[in-house]
Image (tube, rainbow, N blue to C red; front, side, top):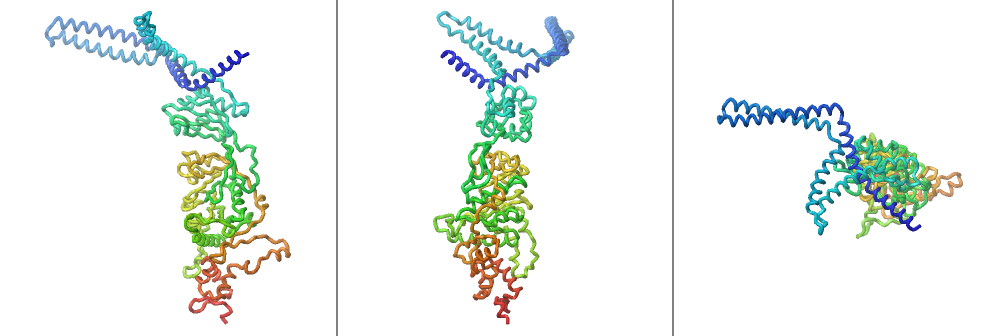
Length: 638
């Protein structure tokens, strides 16, 4: 029984070695067969007749040239005068005969090219050219005392053996062992990635000179490494993606990736027939849960809090569903607060119980002004030797989520129609919205005010969804399905196409790519699904508002919609805590503030909001201005 096992092991090892050598010899065998077929197609009866006629013509002209040469020699002997008529006539005849012979020789060469010898006959002639002399040399050099003198014949025999072995290995069908876990589609694709099938059909698709290794099944699909000859580079091979898909017979919607291999003459084909995230439940959310699962490696993908982020994706790609887990994490902890800016209103309504929301232009302007003022206050509090403020429940990290950047940019271009002579012109200056966000993007990270910018159209023109100054500060870039390769380059950088960040080829919905640094891989990520009902079911959290004093930190309000009159009575905050900006402005004037600057210093409200509230209070008569422009309570008018 032992010898049977040894024989089986030896046979298996031999077959494995031959299977490894077969792809290396396949190009040689394919080139041999192509040349043999070409010669066979040229060996037609018409070309044979032309060859025979050329041979007759060549023999005739050669005889004529020999005769003319002999006549010229005879004329030279008959006369010593080089200018004699006989010698001149013989010289002219010899020259014409040589020209005719040269033309006939060229015609014979062309005829032989049109009717070539078979490749086997040519190989026999080539091997005979060195086998016969080497054999004769070995015989002459051999002595009974020294058998090493047979090396010329051995070398010749070795060359013949290599030729025969190379043809046999190149034409050999390797024993492809397909994984039992393969689907029917994977088995078919793996059989077409087999070197014997590929080499046989590659020339018809313009892929001659490329040889793949047998496909391997991975958790993310089939992977095959392709060897390229001198005519190919990984870039030119990638440009033949349509021809490769046609050769494999792959589905049009099957994701196929062609990347550079381990060496300059290697490329890698990956067919995403399966996902490593299959079978993993990504519905719902819990604190600390990963953002998604890498479909190639199966590893969880985490997006840490405190990272400025761009999220792009076309309508219906699952952008909102994929970002909700980030927002839930950013509003869950005691030292984290969430601000949601959503001009379309739909997403903001889901977060009102645990986030500060802004929908209208005035609300967006107010919250951006408050965030900017908060940033400046916090930057002054950063101690020496640190580059970021320490977060706490009193001074939490604020995650600012802009749900549709294109709408915010459009909102900032809204014309207010106010006169430049109005003292509160800046109260409706919506152009300040984008200036505030640009400043937050550039400076607010140290103050732990973090911007997440989401958009459907990330193009950088005038109608685009992300401002270039904001984009330059983004460190984490995520994209679900995009419309074009140009949008992929805007999100991931100009090297997106070369590096494989092809977000425009992602399936929909819920599959994304995340570029978080130079070492990030362009792997598709199956993101967590988070429905609006899941958001509404989350527990309430404190809401961030700007403090009324520059030194008192942040004021937090727990927002809850009362259902009954009793609930209203129980949850109504103290008058001082629930005072509006208008009440605070009016109280500051009663306390002695007489200019908008005094009110801003006393209340901590930004100057735009102060100007707007002063105008409203003046219109209602609660405030008035004296001749010097000083503000007075309305009751003093009497």
